[in-house]
Length: 127
Image (cartoon, rainbow, N blue to C red; front, side, top):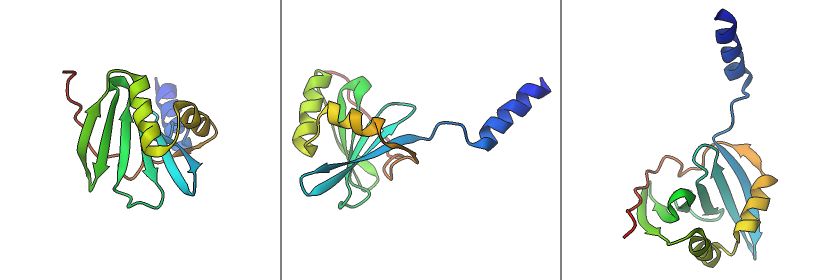
């Protein structure tokens, strides 16, 4: 038992626990898009690097929902009938496809949570 506790503590101390997010940047025209993937929930956060740090969008793939975040709160939450429709909206807003985002995150780096990571988003039930 003592060995298991020691092993668990050494894992925590050595920092081998996963980072809260995976981070990447994508060039879109003349702008740079910051993207974070939450390692626990798989939610994606999109943020133009020249915008205020409190302004972002969060895609919640389990619910096909896209939330607009600003000033520490979700100011709008839209639910879509499928992932494809949600990704069409993301492409319209940010100029990236699911494949672009996945490739960038695969090549990205472990990261702390995005500045908007603590914003709670309530997704409405499907209507």
